[in-house]
Image 1 (tube, rainbow, N blue to C red):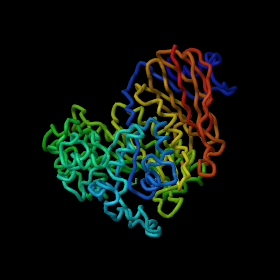
Image 2: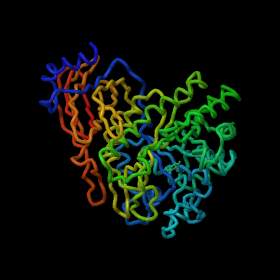
Image 3: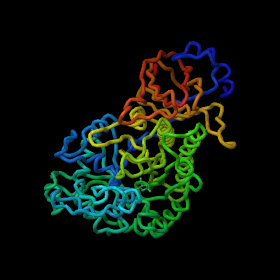
Image 4: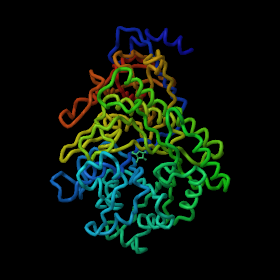
Length: 537
Ligand code: AHR
């Protein structure tokens, strides 16, 4: 049956379906092709990113052992608890641009003896106005062992970014040695033991620089390929397979920067096709933002759609860079990594030392949801994705100030989408009238992703319409539903957000849904993210 025919005949079936049925005729379809698996959704697609920038590390993560703020060995306890709730799979550190200025040796050994260094972001015009503090002059209290401890507490894997711009491959080798050499084996292993960890950290993911086309060294792609080869050549692995991640372009909606990807890979393969064995992943960055960076909480309906449309560009960026990779990496040894992504609005800081900080809203929740759906739909191409950043920065999951801590709208989407982790991504075909906005612009009317976990199906759906519900038929091709529960994240106002004074303004609601058969009808509220967890018959 063709899709349009299905739409016109399905209402009779839907009358026996589940959920809050609507008197309106359905004008949307979410078709889940259970027999068309795409690939496993690596839990790492829901990864995180932390940088020594503004109030991310100091205040956000690290409050110090003597703080009155509840902490675990100096690490903010409320953050750890929420990260455990998310099943946070991986955390990237120490940057970002900061990574290519960082000497890891500054952050090891007794904390009181560590040097104080000028932070990479010190010249930021906003930070210049802030009083002196760890955001400007980094005391290195939070170093490698503290980051590893944070990861362990969260149950996440570490992903460490090396300094390619201002340190050498030898320094990199020794950082690997500090992290991974066996207990008691080397001087650096002993230093690590003194920092509280006799056992190796067994770090698998290593980023070879960050944004090497910019703050990471102003390289041309072919120059960076030489650095990548040097940094990954004969690195001692101590029995721990090392997953090197090459630094790729900062993609833009108007220019995906595929030429960087091609330039780098051509240089790599030009030396030897075997070098793809060294490339675990190749990273791109993509931030979406309204023209001129608009306010995070004040926007028109058109600006709402504009932002969602910009976020949707991720879909073609992943496809374009993956296609380019395939021209060189014939055996598909390397996967794509999106290790910085998110909506980036105008800074509206909680204080002068907070960089690139604002309060995310329901709009950012939808940006996050539709992006995670895109990642799920490209599960076979992607090894890892890291939202920028975890706390107090850009597309943040949390805001902190002293002892105050709030989970943003973005957190709730991650919490909903954790059910996809490790599942088998299924092909989903969505169909609904497009939304027109601005001067002749268009956005799809409904989109989502699905994954199978044994006998359980997880479906997530975004209705981007700012004011209208979408009544859609959900067609399970190749299976039937037995029972379900539904979780919905939305709010009456598209500007809704959580902040310190209103921590629960936007929160998901879960309830059971009665289910029968393979064809169901659901009303997706305006401006919403919906998750259906379906037990199959
Ligand atoms: O996430 C903030 C900054 O954005 C990172 O340091 C850099 O990699 C990117 O340009």
